[in-house]
Length: 200
Image (cartoon, rainbow, N blue to C red; front, side, top):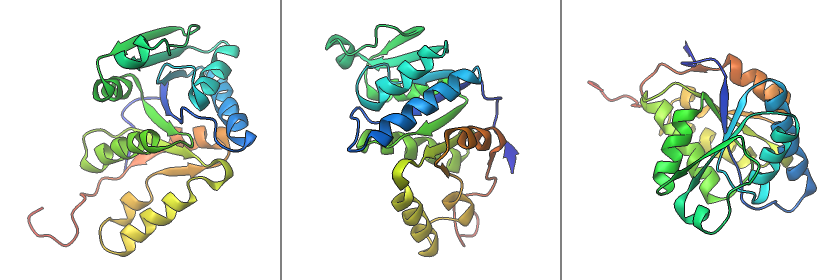
């Protein structure tokens, strides 16, 4: 196992552009944003005021933290950019937005969300599995939101599609402070993705 490539100076947070059906989602997004700022870590996120995205940014800003938004052109043109950010960038499209967020971040956290959030999480996990980067990533497990994901990864491993190191490499933690502690200690797997295939 190896260290994350850089110390945790910045963290990209992927999150829903809706609030979810329980106030716990908002409360925990706020707690995470506050804790990131208290630790002097720069928050990188999708740049809008919508849903949990806006909550985590507002919380970090309220604690005096640095918050960088990366928004795509379409949402920028619709007026979705958060007006109070420390800085922002406008990316041409979603693919470029994700790539830029990845460049700016030393680690990643997924809050509960929908397709976009899950896609962003799996992309950074896949890049680690392939060895394209070795950045830590985690899920804030509000209301056990990510337990089905934990079960799915375990099932993929049991069925022979993933090695156990890759099935277990995503941190899934319900407490924001403990999650950040685990991110700082995370180590990337050093095994290849192929199972029982000579020459791979």
